[in-house]
Image (tube, rainbow, N blue to C red):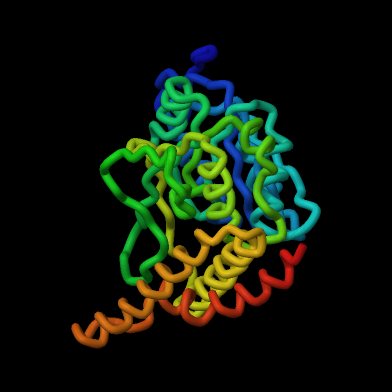
Length: 298
């Protein structure tokens, strides 16, 4: 577990360092990034380093990260914008093969680093993911996952099992598989999940890996974001269908049925018709599929 050291931010409690890198993609959100780094600092175990991949064009990220030299936090500039690109840059820049991934609009539980490390030592060939409940008020419902039961997805064909805002893995295995597909504007995590499981590799959900996702966007921004997610999901489906993978038809049908079924149920019960997810599927997926069909032509 490394050499114990006193953590002055936890009243002198003993904090271990583990030989792993925490990877954080960010883009112009200094206040959120600071809160995340403070949550890592407050943990009972510290990583060997924190790698922040900056996609912004100002100096705010570097100014924030400079306050966390005790965490061995450093900034790596991205060559261009794009979440898949940022994730790949962080994988290549990590100084350790064990990596823990989290997004900049999250905060981590005090035992998150330690729990990730313990699970990796018991299950070193797996990608591990965990709980990502929404923090704060539920007024603007954003993506979250708070299932209390562990689940092993190995041997299944799933494209939504991994939350890269809460993941741990051996970066060499991810890079060997080609990393995240930078041609996708989003849904890069779903694409990696599908390729990983299709290759017969292990992916395990562990509920004691806990990260909170913070709501900060307006309703209008969330609507745009979810339509963008829907477009990216359509492009992901087109990518694999272009290659003759007919399983994508089942995924597409499932998404559309859930979205339309939700609309009908909402109308009958008098509930909200346009959740962000339904809007994203109905207004984003078809156009994204057409774009993806062009992008991924042989």
